[in-house]
Amino acid sequence: SAVISQKPSRDICQRGTSLTIQCQVDSQVTMMFWYRQQPGQSLTLIATANQGSEATYESGFVIDKFPISRPNLTFSTLTVSNMSPEDSSIYLCSAETSGIGGEQYFGPGTRLTVT
Amino acid sequence: GESVGLHLPTLSVQEGDNSIINCAYSNSASDYFIWYKQESGKGPQFIIDIRSNMDKRQGQRVTVLLNKTVKHLSLQIAATQPGDSAVYFCAESALAGGGTSYGKLTFGQGTILTVHP
Image (cartoon, rainbow over all chains, first blue to last red; front, side):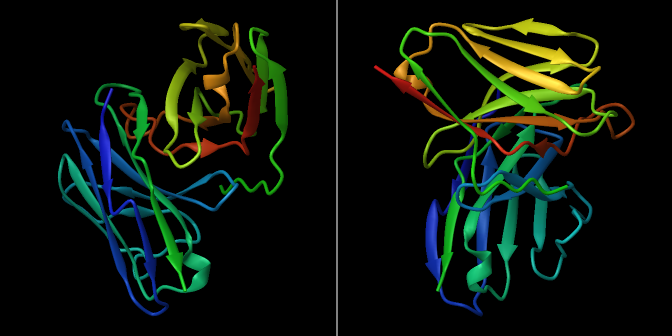
């Protein structure tokens, strides 16, 4: 398994500002991902954080709004840019353990409220 | 794709009963499935997974059944305990990345399980 931590755990931000969320894994992993979860709803994949190259974004998510960094095999950041109240959500990072068809583990999430 | 569910299905059971949580998946190309448990204020916790070359897999107090014919997945929890109360999500994926990663997961809408003492 993998132990994943996220910082901050929660934040309240003003509209128009940006927040960077950090994700740290306790072991080297090949694949890391960022998801969004609206309150009371399911998870939606934002992007795959690729180490050494640009992130791969899902439909409806763009790099200008959600820039992602992946400087090494244990760390990634997600920035929520130019925030609006619609960005209020829980942001979760996950990591897939190495090997063919590895299990995917999640961090505790970052609860973001935009006022 | 995005899974949206404003009104999650609910399941209420008595402590000690067996629970069965169901999930219908949409992509016939999916070949890997995971069940997650999410408690309030926490991230999803991996419970058990199954690949499409299997139709049943057992863990500790949990069993996952896969019916590819009707694209149905179920999670059975034996002797349910109050600590099992949570939202349960199924997730599906297909082997990608040249066959080395399952990568992105598509989540179902979730089921709220409440266990009464």
